[in-house]
Length: 556
Ligand SMILES: [Zn+2]
Image (tube, rainbow, N blue to C red; front, side, top):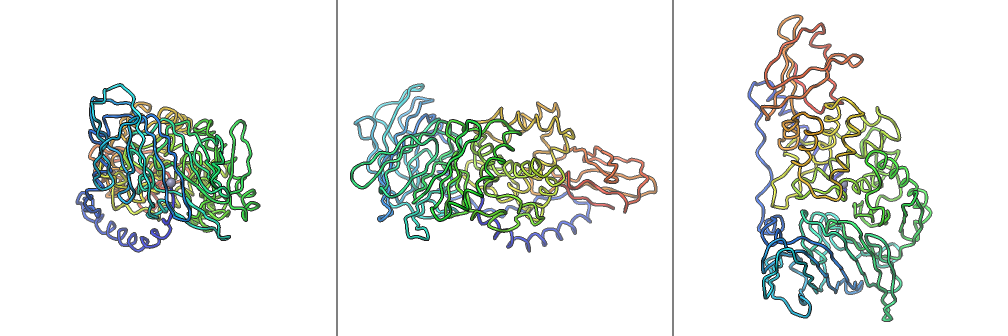
């Protein structure tokens, strides 16, 4: 996802300057760095209900959703049902689902039997008259109706109009959760395996949802039903309606269908701008392997907000211009060479949609990796040096005030460091590996190992450690679980020698780093204990490869 970060970044520029000067002052003392106190408030009861993966979620595994809704643009309402098929993983009589408190539950049925339920804020506990047995599959129909609220950074479910006055209705609910507009098991750990989406709308409108277009059926009452089939696991928040007077054009990349949906007025601009989809897909394919949702195809759909990675149906609102909302996003000229939203949001097909985090706490697996994919795109099209410049141009956006990984089980979205510090960390890891052949194989195999799965950071670390036969855990932990960057301390106490060590929160932190002169780097292997080496260069002459390693440096 991506939206409004520009504004927040501007506001944070001041704060960042203060943080920088504060860390300069503290670096003069020999105190170990103390992580700053958390600025994050306590979770609400709603956060806990939504974020915990408790007994009534863990006792079942989602298999299939059929979301079948009728959308009334005039009343701004939705009526319909989600048919939910699941397999029990333990004997039990209750499961936990979610639906926004402002929407009505009309009935919940097991076959013809109405089920009792209990609502607690956005949570719906569904009770069964007899015990559901472990290993068996069950199907319930969850009927609901109401007026979803427009909310959150992306709109939740937004009933808007285009410039021509036509209805333009879109959904985007990554942070707020899909239950703001439809009933589901609204958490990250358990993705449904497959899904059918049926959307009935007035005849003059088009619905574009995720997956492959199956058919449309005239219902004879002024409404038409559009049927879409998702043939891969999908995050709830990726499920999208895009309803408007869309026009369509298509293309192919090998066997992969490419479909583009835009407002009629933007057809010519879109045909030019969306030509970037092919080199983007080719670039990511070359690093990681086939596009993950081949059977569902790839789509770009115009929306009234910046963009969102809706699986196989990427939402696009970048105005058909390069950069990010017509600005040089990274400020070094490179961003204006491509459409940021096409590259970033589509990059999520590999990281976010195929490889997904199991708790929002570890969302850097989506955003840190996808921001890194931007730089891989730059590397493929414009070369290695431009990619390194691109990664480093994200430094001014990093705050280093909170750890990238947040507390689990409370549905707390991490702060924006997960994007920029996340990608600078991955660039640092590449330098630690120090062999591009190994690095490319590693990131490709990492993706292949975990595609279509929901994982946590521990899985990432375990994979990297095993493949590199090296315990990098303290490096991952320092960058992801502490606020402060590693500081390389270089002490020039006597002529001809230099002492060096890392100052970090992680006592076991040990990371090689390149120092000396840019045309002839020397790799040293500092730990958190002092080491001494002979050196010919003076304090002023010694440089550190800080565009390859995201660190701070103190010379004394
Ligand atoms: Zn993103």
